[in-house]
Image 1 (cartoon, rainbow, N blue to C red):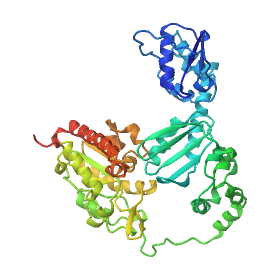
Image 2: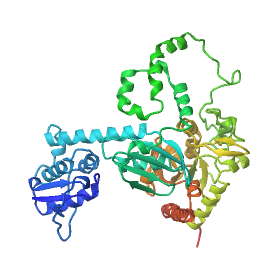
Image 3: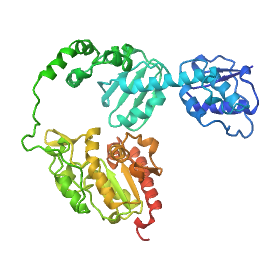
Image 4: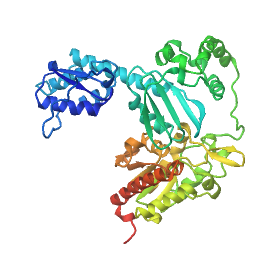
Length: 476
């Protein structure tokens, strides 16, 4: 009997290497006992390793299934996966297609449970603000059913990259310091903050956005089970909001319709007509855009700039403070870093077109300063008219999304930059594209060492553009 001890409860790579050695040595699942670190004894053994272990050829869906199921809390998960791998490599290559097989069925249920738990964690984590020696930190407590902390880490890093945060769970903890992610030991709920001064604001927002006409308690409990309620600051509001939903709906139906806020001059803005088939024509239409409210507080609309036949188009997020005042894209600090990176990558700035996914500066006043705010999905989608119009006219050979906002505008979906970065892919309307970070991300990094590392990666991404389109490179 061979006892295999794994050092991580969710370690797919470690499991895969161990399984390769066992399969190569023809060791049956009945002769292997698997343990994770927290379950291990003193008699664990390293699995046999051939001199040059080779990858195992299995059905395409096994790796996806294994990456999910290995995060399950079931202590038999490693043994079940090895049993499945053994059968796939010993004559049952189509086993994953047999949904009625007890082993396949059990692992599929485990996979669905992990996927559901992952979705719930990304939906129901609530941060609370605390202060430590380094300043503000946001801390959350969550109780996942499975070992999903590493699995969800990229979601939280991408979504909350601009703030220091920690997520504490009974299975482990995760910490982001604006530059790197680290994992720590399991903690007790008593070590999590109980509340902060932001929660009253959040409850007010939740109450104001609650739509009584769409209240469905059965569906709501299915999507937000009661076991999560005790960690949600809005949970105490839910019973009263549901109880009053019928009365509020009746009042809404009986109320007279409200005229648009901009009446009598309001009218919906039509999509670009491109009647003159020029960038100047679409610029004029975009200048009159009222599809969202961002135009009210912006100085002016900031359109794209560059040759109308540019082989590559770079799309950023939105104008910043200096762009809003100048009426030109990429002239502020992030733009200056972008131009420097282009030069280091050997790309001629005069041969590319630069624009933004959102054409008006979104901000909030703070004293005499105007602080950048990230556009929401509705604002990004409203502005897609103009970006699509620019791209339809220019017809670039390559379109580069700088940051998550631009990536959403060019793909129609939320994108994980770390996963999609640095490789050629197909954007909406079958456009060839690349996705990388926005240069403002580099400016937000906390120290010069981290900034230098990420800047080199950014330049490398731009060099890939140059390799794909040598015509835009400067002559030697």
